[in-house]
Every structure is written in C-alpha cells, then in structure tokens.
Amino acid sequence: MFKIQGSSPASSEIRTPRVRFTELSAGYPGRPVLRQLDAEIPALAITALVGPNGSGKSTLLGVIAGVIHPTSGRLHHAGDRPPAFVPQRSAVTDALPLTVRQTVEMGRWCDRGPWRRLTRQDHATVDRAMERLGITDLATRQLGELSGGQRQRALIAQGLAQESDLLLLDEPTTGLDPEARDRIAALLAELVAEGRTVVQATHDLEAARSADACLLLRDGQLAGQGHPERLLTDSTLAQIWQPV
Image: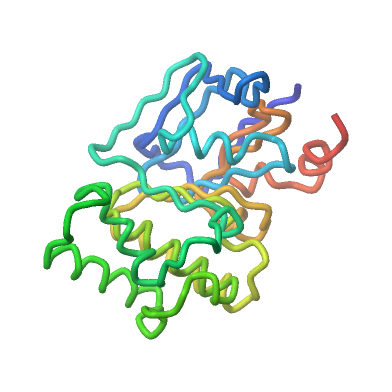
C-alpha cells in the first residue's frame, strides 16, 4: 500500500491537532473497515476525507463522532465538547413527520436530552443556526418536502445548534447545484475563521482542494495525509481509484 506525506510551503505552519488517532481500527460485526490508521486532524482548519466508495470515510467520521467504537487503537480529542455530526442527507428518513425547526432543535438534545423543554437560550441558538443557513422561512415545512439543498442546510443548522467546536460532515455537497455547494463552502470557511474545526468526507475534488488538510483513504487504510495541493494530483488520484 503506497503512502504519501504531503505538505505545502504555503501551509507549513504547525497546527495543533484537534483529533489524533493511533493504530486505529474499526468496523462492523464480521466486517472490518478501518485498519491501523495513524493521523491527526488539525484544529481550526478544514480537513477533507477523500477516497472511493467503501474506503472508510463514513466509518472514520462515525468513529470521530463517537457513534462507532474502535476495535483497537487509540483516539484522542483535544476539545471539551462532543463533536457535532451531520450525516448524509440520504441517511435521514422521510418517515418521521419532522418540521425543519424540529429538526434543528434536535441539535440541542445533546445538552437538554430529548424529553426536556428547551430554554429561551436554546431557542435563540436554534434561531441563529437557522438564520445563518437561510432557512428561517422554511421553519414549518416538513423535512421530507424539501429540495436536496434545503435539506442539507437544515441538517447543517442542526449541527451548528450543538455549539461544538468540531463539525463533522458526511458528503455535505453531494448532488447539490453549484450555488448550494458554494454557499456551504463559504459557511465552512466562516466557521473555521470563528474558531471551529471542520472535517468533511467528500467526493467533490474542488471542495477537497480548497481544504487546509487532506486524508486519503483506500481500502480502509491511510494512503496519504497532508496538504491537498501535494496530495490531490492526477497520478495519486489514479492510484487511489484503481481497482484493489
């Protein structure tokens, strides 16, 4: 398995790790996915997880989020609050009759629990998240009625409502039109400037190339890590996507 260490003179400053994992392995019953990963997620930066389908991107996000437990290895978080995890919008069922506002309010459950009434401060936090994503006018709409871009913005607003300094997103721009992609990319850059760390699994190479750091995954292993300028070359990507 080839490995690439990439760095760029333009981004040579040392960043404090927000997340560090060593010899990390994880998967599902009878199906190992991640194998012996050693890497760091820099704080106050956007890190892109890049790789083919089945390479382990979503599983790694799940491990960092705490919803998937490692089978071996070590995972260290430098922050005090749990990460905010935004799944793929296709993973969110339409069966539950949730409005957009109710969906965003679920982001406050991490502090209140699902059965306690939200406080005035909680409602203000939800209002800010919805306003920031431009979905205030969609508050009473059913989540299942929304377009792909609208639904994605509602899920990201839910993540923002958790008020975590670490935001994890699984394919946040897949299937969106260019305007929606640009809007989300601008928001993520703003969040980093405000002191948050963002990790996104993505097939969007344009989004990956605009990130501050990149982890390349292939067949559950780390194929490379560093700055996208050095990692996301035509020759490297051809090797990553060639049949195993």
